[in-house]
Image 1 (cartoon, rainbow, N blue to C red):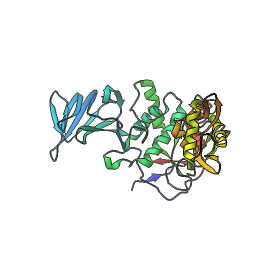
Image 2 (cartoon, helix red, strand yellow):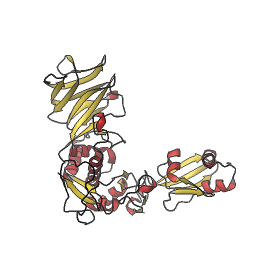
Image 3 (tube, one colour):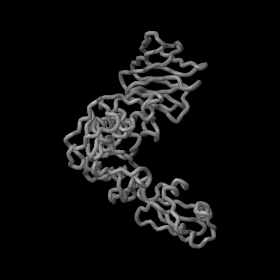
Image 4 (cartoon, rainbow, N blue to C red):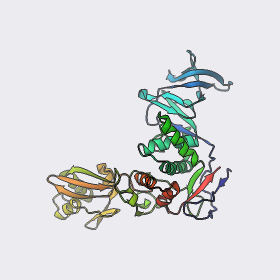
Length: 385
């Protein structure tokens, strides 16, 4: 069993008193296996960038190795075939490695740059399964790039790196039965490889490697913290029990750092008929019921609430959010003619790290440890070796 070493440093200044190890204990040097273009149908895939080494596997035969500048893999008549030197050959699978990040072309001609290497395998009768085999910190750098987008700052990126690494450590077997560990979409963590901008790439990699091996653990155990995050809390964090299971480090608290940010407030308009009709249908009432109309047309939520209540009945605000595609479940309403004007705060579920709040903390001079302490109170940093 791999050893989990707890760092002396902790987020909250607590000692590493927990003894119960939870979940698999990864090494910081492990390769992550990411299914790329996981939501797309992949029929062919191209690799380039420097000297590529392709290793061809066929049954019990010794694998063949070819060196070339490009490799093209596709499906043909039910077989996996690849071309590295001008000749198409079949194989059970092909592994592609390079001496630098690989340039790729995937579905619809989408071009991306990836660290690490790849394995291409047949998927079903006609598709390809393309898996990026990438060192954990190179993967983390790509996650930071995709998940944070325009928001920059070394301490923000270091905080997100720790969050991303913790999520992977806790969920690394999520898709193990399907031949990879994680996907590149929101079912796991968004990951599109590395950016083409070399300066941004350098800074991202530096942020990931400067926190190499660090993960967040619960205060009293060796269980990985469930490192949920969202775009903006609107000024108050939501307890995880309002959406998911209650977790000790995902609690309701004031988050002033998320105020006055680009996504702190939002507005949306919906017709009164559609809005009232939904609640009337849900609660089995008439759309003309005056008390119902008042309750849903004049919602006042100065602070986050879990439920909208009317006539002894309850409806989760998250359910309303999901029904109407609202940015968050924290909103109030007013009527403007034939429309309901929804005034909302925050973007996302509001649980765990607020990315804009963390960005603001970094701008104000807070370090990544302080950011993690604010958004996952009571958790502690640990190092995986």
